Length: 400
Image 1 (cartoon, rainbow, N blue to C red):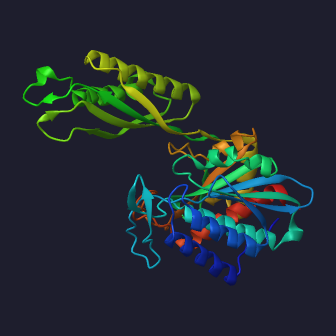
Image 2 (image 1 turned 90 degrees about the horizontal axis):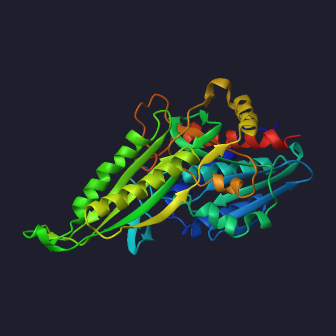
């Protein structure tokens, strides 16, 4: 088995890497400096690498005949103004929709990259311990569901050897030092829709001359809640969220247009199809009932469902338990959050395994959650747990 113990020098390097990445976040598909930093680190380790999917990086570490595994770390950050107060807090900005916005690693992707780079260095230093090939995938744009598809579409699996399994991990506000995993359906599919509603504009004092898209939208918002409450079986899972509702410019003008943005989470293909069909049915029916023109329903983006292979996932979980202890590796129910990780394995029909490593301090009953301006996993033992998990999972396949 590979040795996952870090020297003090390696630990200091790991922390410096993490703080650099945390202080210099970049938005999805804009990770140019992050890409250059990763490439410099891979050069220092001594790994061959190439760019893929725009701002993605892929490194290949070959050690003769043996299994082939891929490990993915995502690299992008979020449009959030950091409020952690640490000395290495981000003051970075980025461009989003024509506006300059603050940027923060509010979902822990800095810790993912740090764990992968540290693990790659540790594994490379122990070349005699293993046989096989590792494909390290540093993927952009997880937050927008663009990154994995961009890499696959750019020929990832033509340029890199096809793996036997694709693995990855994500920091989450469980207790630091622990691992949580789910076999089979692990995370939800996510669909985001933009719905344009059309009406007839008039003066607020003359509603009889209008077709009010705000009233129409209000009926749609209310009716959409019946999908989960009355159309989905109680033991199935779905979420329908109306995240934005925009209409009008002045209080005494009934506008001619309104816009809704929806986010839908489901755990099975059948439920997903039912929910999406119901949304279309309800939106069109309410428009007809209002005498309004037919609305436009546009897909903004889609996250695939994340499924962990039961057999290979159990093998990885056993390796994690051997490394971290039975009490620290916990099988849990699925999460309704979403990831585009699954597309990497799905595109070539190979198994995948994805798990979560905790980032909350022991005893913290109310840790900041992912996507919060206060999200900041404790460095110890979060980072080293990410490294130990990564090395142990890869070692389950390539260790001599």
